[in-house]
Amino acid sequence: MTLTPVQLTRPASTTDAFLRQLVARVPGGSPWHLTEVYTGQLLVELPQSTPDDIEQAFAKSRAAQRKWAATPVRERLAVFKRAHTIFVDNARTVTDLIQVESGKNRLMAIEESCDPPMVMSHYLKRAAKLLAPTRRGGPVPMLTSSTEIRQPKGVVGIIAPWNFPFATGISDAIPALMAGNGVVLKPDNKTALSPLYGVQMLEEAGLPEGLFQVVCGEGPDVGPTLIDNADYVMFTGSTATGKVIGERAGRNLIGCCLELGGKNPMIVLADADIADAVRGAIFGAFGNTGQICMHIERIYLPESRYDEFKTAYLRKTRDLDVRAAYEFGPEMGSLVSVDHMRRVKSHVDDAVAKGATVLCGGRPRPDLGPAFFEPTILEGVTKDMLCGVTETFGPVVALHKYRTVDEAVELANDTDYGLNASVWGSDIAAARAVAARIESGNVNINDILATAYAAKGTPSGGVKNSGVGARHGDQGLLKYTDVQNMAVLKKQVMGPRPGQDPDKYVTSMLSGLKMMRRFRIR
Image 1: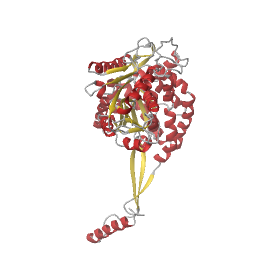
Image 2: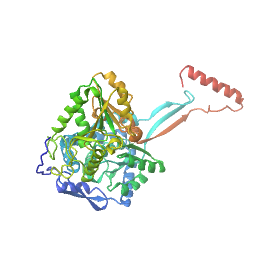
Image 3: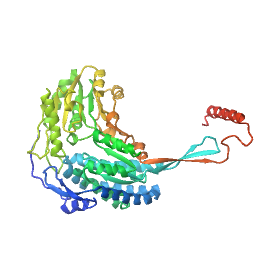
Image 4: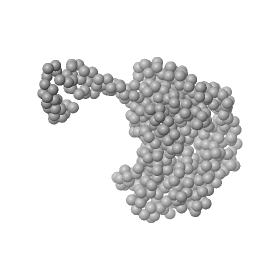
């Protein structure tokens, strides 16, 4: 593999003045040092918000939200029509910010910049219909009606992760805003710049100032106050933190959507195109340096093709271009921080100490940058190892053999998680049958994750310990609304008429139920 340190110059767009302008939006003091991942050098001092700052942010958003909710839907959507153009036109600047704060390679960064425009485009087609009042039938034909009215929840609290700060911090806010809500976003300290720029672009498109607030700080310091002031919470992150957030939201009697961790399997069937499967597994394990909630950490291979896949996979992995660069070329960049690199290393070290074999990689590369770690393939991983049961969230993947498809499915499902899975085979019908047996919110056939995640019209979420609720699809917007049932009675026919024998009324009522069922009226 190519492992060549380079002399780096920050992208021209990321000037000190520009970065200071972005963080000036964040209320607070006691600044946190936000550093360039590739070099460890200071980028900007990021204010840390106090509980009072957070409460004031909610108050400002709530004041703006009352006017925004009263704005006709078509006028709200017009903001996002303009925003779509602005976001696409500034995708390279977004990419620069994502790279300096997260260390991912440039292609992955620019792909992330495209996610909010894709979400806007989808909901620009669907939101008006989803938010329009829908008339339903009432209990008595012609004399009663019931209308389903969608109302915004108020102010939504969004807690975004560091691995896709722009795609989650902004994309999760878009349907909430379209539905008439305000938003208070807490990005991760390490990756606050790109979502801050996203808010700036939305305001340039006409989003009312104050509606979208950003607060910063460490989770334990910021999270409780944010949840206690929110009308709904959207969280993406670890299962452990998700449980804490879910418990607090439950005590406050507010809803939440939690997209949590995964230990995602890839099953290669005996008839799969091995070259395609290898290419997929390269991205599945090492895309975004393994820091994707839906990435692959376990690969199950038929005994008959194990060596064929292993040989090709090792060759491709060793040929990967891994380095720090702000131009296209590198196929894998850095992990997000030194602390996270140490966590990934601890998983590999634990596996080796308990008998696993490192087929390639397995080492930090401080010569490339403070948080670089080699793409790593393991063999002989078992469930008594950390990386056998716990999400590693780095460029580490384990190969496993299976004898029958039933065994492969059983192994894939032998986890507390259920976020994403991948099945590869030439017979699509057979692959679909296997996919249907996997306990996962997302299953891709002959792809790793993009086909499912980029399908914005279909809900995407996890099962088991991988989450509650979903983003995307109709559900991804409607979750940010409450339903009001407005019912109308045109004539007083509910109950016996004055002087009517109650028994005759009941007989008439029961006959009416049978008649309505017979003629499918109700």
